Image: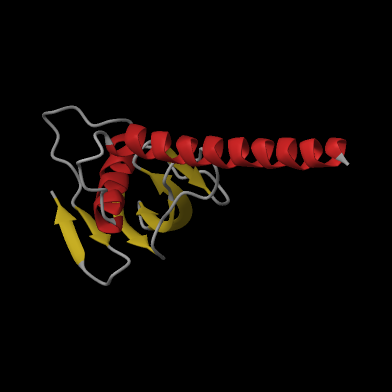
Amino acid sequence: MMIKVWTVVAGLAVAGALLAGTTACAEMGDRILYGKSTERPKSNLEYQRESALHFRSRWANVEEIRFKREGGKPGLGAAWSVNAIATLDGEEIEVIIGPDTLGFPLGDSPPMMPTLPPSVPRIAMTVFYSDGTSEVFE
């Protein structure tokens, strides 16, 4: 009878340790992602804006980005990302982008234009956010 009690106690201890470990990992991940715990987390629109600008840093010929939905973290340890439609040289391409990723095309790879030298004016980029607002970047 005593062995069964210790088996149950040991099982509860292991379950408690696993729960504490996974909770601590999530808390630590939030601290790494958002910085100090006193900082407010970024909003979905802030992430979308950063994602659009980051995508533009690689694809200088992007004319428009339309976010199809709010973004998020798809899994444990995954970076924030969102589905969007990017228009490059008049061609619409579905992509998955994020502030820390260069973009993953969902089909053919977009036509890449090299980063423009500072003397050449950038193409205006219009960003349509998931909440229906928009912004133009010159």
